[in-house]
Image (cartoon, rainbow over all chains, first blue to last red; front, side, top):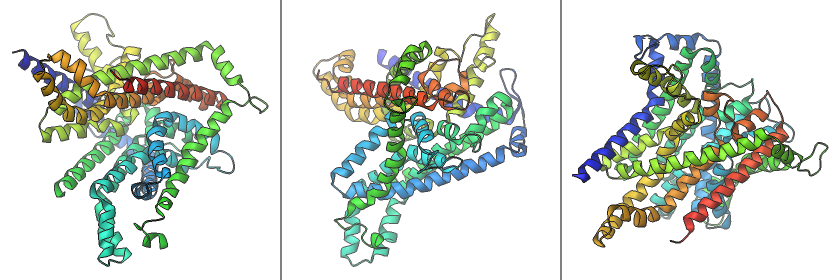
Length: 265
Length: 279
């Protein structure tokens, strides 16, 4: 009796928590499609908020900028993290161990806030004068996203025993391009794409670094949302909803990808 | 070309680390070194503790420091209790449902802090749903205040509880069945099983989750800024204020950042020590 009661209570609490988790996801979307929401229930179905976003001179450039930043961060992270994962996977050197440790500790000690203050101090004067460019935001988002891609790719290399696969291909007389395009690319595509989607989504919604180092020159979509929250709540709802769509679509793609790779293994 | 060709041959593996190490040096290490160096530099250059003296002599800063530690500690406690409950429930689900749930728990990580702020303003803001519904039933109001400490503490579990659950669920799954069966065979009751067997066995996961949440909460300011503006005095918000256009003072911001980092590291070490202690 108490067993069943406890179990029901557990299920109820979990259901309540999952409902709570849906609040920031569902409410902006519902709000963005309603014409009035003064009472308890929203009223009227409309696309006006989205029209306002498209008509507002500042929103479209901000969406384009956010895409540019997120895509650049994704590419930068891929170029850095895939070779690094391979190096750590193969090399049994102290350097590889240091890197593993550093990637665990750095993100905890130096969060976005600390990084942004450090960037403001470092990249506004020679030899690294990046002030007034968008690259400083890209670098910051890449720094936040790097550990995700690195861990995903390294885990894939380890579970697949990738060095044995490349070794086997080579022993069978495969030239290097075959090793690359028939062994490495197909085997790592899953983790690189899912890691990349996470980096993209993370960057697209990131507010703190973008706000602190972007200044007035570079206002990404979340930075603009911060401003609209005070000025125009209705347009803000559509911007928030767009950010929800990107995050949710990214997550769905990652889950489908993971389900497929585990199914084929 | 040579690099492409030599991919996977033994001997020069470290070379593959170089681009990432250069990035880490330039975008993690150098900014941190600059930040620490700047915090210890005086007006006319040279080594000085002036910034830290200013911090200690300014009640607003010391209050922000204490508020931040208390807020992060309370958030961590909520995250660990909630995350553990959620993990225990999730670990007992069937494989398919569990996989779907774990995917949902990963969602907050990429969800923009400003979207979260928007959602909670609509739900628990002054004219939000909760206040309107309670207003129908009772006189007066507003009944819940999102801009209070309690209101803020109710926002961050959105991030922290699923994060803790993601870390703890696989551990609960692995340990739970074997250990609780063993304990039950030895005649331990439910409470005893939890207190003496499961919680100690889960300690590495609790330490990992607690460290991540505490560090993140010490640093967080975006969502708080969007909800309360500067009406809540937190160290992270002070650092933001000192390094944004209104009160531009980067040396002071650096010193505050050093205080924040040192506090975080100290607490993480304590959490680590508690986690390693033998029972």
